[in-house]
Image (cartoon, rainbow, N blue to C red):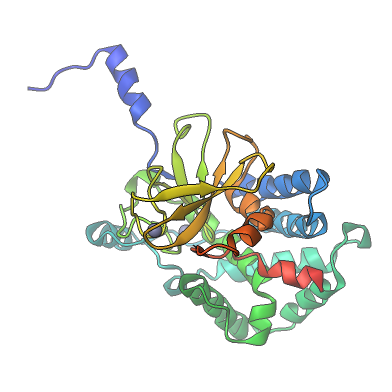
Length: 318
Ligand SMILES: [Zn+2]
Ligand SMILES: [Zn+2]
């Protein structure tokens, strides 16, 4: 027999019923990243110039996000994904043409940026070169980039390698748009639990959220579509081992970003802690904490998956 819950019990249930999946909101996602990078740059950050460049890129993403609309997801694909505990739309198999619209929009923003915006000349030239590239070639580049993100390898073609951050930025706009149109409760529980339930790519970092129903919970954050999915703390986000998880941080850096290391697979992935800084954003803070990667480079732990915008650092330095 079904028992009717009393109001207090309903509230108690509500408290444990935190969201398993948090879908991105493109209308604010890119603007928040841009603001976060500018905030970190203003605090005299060691790579302040570089953070200002990626903030410009995120501005262009925010504008492009308003211009595109990806196709609705086929319910049959969703049902199949749930049955087989698979991601709904593995990224490289489901490239929505809206990504090209996003790229177009972003390139024209970058090409028309005033000198005061501080865009590095090399990037302005790169934007021009992509504008002159045929759409089918751009699509081939996009597929190289997506396969590379999956496999942890760089794209084969030189131009795709050089332009990776710009291509990734446009792809992020399209995949975040599509993720934002899904129903979070309808998404599958995927196997392994360490890949994005929407696009199947590995997370760029994880985040300990504050506020609202997600507060106090740890989520893995997709480096492509920005979908977040819950994974209990003290569990490796790479091999799911629960033994030998430790945390390392840069001395004096405030522990907003720590490296979570695993004794089982000898990988590390960063955990961005909003309890230490409410404005911390997983992808933005991961990128801005290169010092921690340098520190980890001297240990036996290998980075579990790259930040897809990182290649821009090398570009900007040149
Ligand atoms: Zn994803
Ligand atoms: Zn592990």
